[in-house]
Image (cartoon, rainbow, N blue to C red; front, side, top):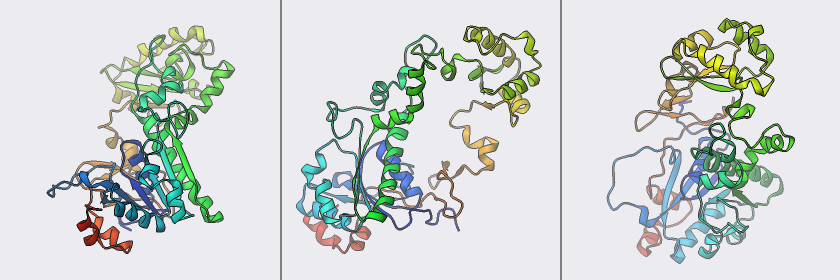
Length: 383
């Protein structure tokens, strides 16, 4: 099968996506990559007056787009018609917006009792912050996430949106939707999936909450085992100003590292005593500055010392391991894009050819739903 032919375990599943930013299209990309037919609903105002050249974005990969005026009565009827035969509906508006538009859970579940209704917000559907604006950094803040990351004894640092928007939000939405779809196959009933990015971040940090309660992780940033305090789980600078990682946590891996670095264990401070961590880090750092990043990869790569070089984003597609696994593929708009993960042996996901350009698939989607696109366009309900 061609790598861009439709495929994946979610073939036959239809998802209606109300166009949103950041976390929501990341979540629906995961569903589309696994074969779901994701139909994104754009606003009519988002359709450009003239066609423009094809532009590529992973946010839009594998999805179709229609443009609907949700303030038009017939526009709401279009959403109801699509939901009637869909398996899931997902949105990322503030709480109450869909209800006011007439496309809330009660409205659409009345049309299709088997529908899975996915809701993605920062703070959740209730609570004192539910109606407040926020971004990934804010959700990472009240959960303790960024409060545990930063320079030694220093202030918390902003992260990329990976924790809040993508892992805590979009990925948890996709997971919740798939779980609810699985249950609906047995019960015949849909349900609402309330995905809050703040909940998702806390779920990702569940192990560290336990470590904090037990005293294994303290509030002093940069002094704990996994946050840069331990020399056995750290980043080291090389002679060419690049960086490498060493993480020989287990004794046998640590012993192999010392052997390959030609360091006598008897001459080193006890690594199990945190009081020795700074001195031991300085010893390792001095050694790592004797070679370049690539030289260290030649010496330590592929061994059991738990080593990897630090690559920039633009370098990642060229690492031999990523090349060997085919982690990146050629993108239609040029350059590379990631192949879907995880990898399934019999029904693997595949990056789709179609990209959700605003309104591009309106006619085809409406006809598939048994609606007349010309009449709806004339009335102003679609664009």
